[in-house]
Length: 622
Image (cartoon, rainbow, N blue to C red; front, side):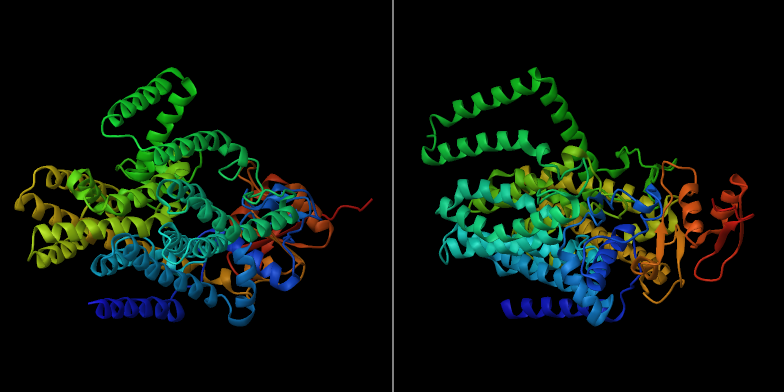
């Protein structure tokens, strides 16, 4: 069985890599990806981290593009960690943009096998391990991110692999210090690509204090392993942002400000002290109930009596619901989030999904409310759930949905753990209902067919299939899972298998449709990724992200600030005075010359429906 399952994983992995190598589209999905590539191009062509985008012309916010490009002491720079910059630069020089997509696919394959390793370490069952790996690939939304410029799959891979090594150190399987150092080293690599890997530090600390055979050695080894990454991040951020804060994104707000976490750090340290005390002197069966009751009373009283804490708990509950259950309730000041009369909500044109809407099979997790399910699995389940709760905490507490995407992409590192929990639950249900494998298979197929029919026939179309059908199905899966947990009978078990299978099939449909949408969007944006495609000479280009302009110091890209009605006239005037051509989309240029009588326009040859703005009567230079 082990050889067969490994062969299956190798076959699917080869298919993922082949798609990335031969067919995946190279256009951009969103500006974030442009900035990653811009930073890598800047580094490989000039060896620096500062982006050249025309600030010598005028201090215009149009040249900053978005808050994603902060202005540091040395100039504009990418807000993102430097891993993509350092790794992509040689890949782009040697193989072009295709290599970046292939790198994401390789990381996705690495995540699949790291998930297999995690499942084996936690539950020791090869069948569960291969099921979890396949669920990660086809029943979560990770596969969409296997063919993108975003480094999300690198984050999933490094988090899962670091966790595998941490578990080795936790049990002292091959010694403690060496695997802990390796775990920290891999975690550090992940930090260089995405800072969400930082959340592993409190997770590892809690688990080490609670379960480790040698917690002090484990924590010291992990700290040694991750230290080089923190040093690199601190030095890079000093150059980019003027701060040694290794977690900085260059802004003044957001989840990367250290001071945001100080209250939570204080609470966390107190909780760790209590955990250590409980481990050193475990409560007896006689003393445990009053201790638990007293702790509950203290927590409830604190929430009731402290207004700030009460408000935080309310925000956390609301944020959790919006990000985990129903994205349609997300409130945002951003004009790209639009609630439609048909009951769906679009995020910059996409029907973005909360976690349960992406993966309705998550309702199966209510099987965990069965006390008997924990027998023999308690430690492993506690480890997986500890990861899920702590990792999701900062996002749920702030209700930050991650901008334009089809899913809650910040939750991607959760996918291996959720897939493992689902695999354990499915294996449990199959053992309670032997011989119903074909039933589950039919349910999976039906689960993929139902949202397809909804898309084709229902007035809400694909958005309704993603946000309404999936939500109804999640509720149904949760209901039957709860019934199967507390009304043990063949009927409830089979019902849980059938509804869970429907949830798996719908998740597969969601992944496939999201991939299709992503690939279509990237195909339409193909010119953006072509270095040779654009204009020549000194030119200021408005609202058109051309890679040729991003890497040519004579060419400047401007994006209209959302705080201004149109292009910055001061910048346009300065560019013309410095003998730049000024190009804008035709509609924008028309509105601009109507507003400012000193300018005229003509049609410009080149990519896009662009017009050239020039002085109607060139003023006398004083």
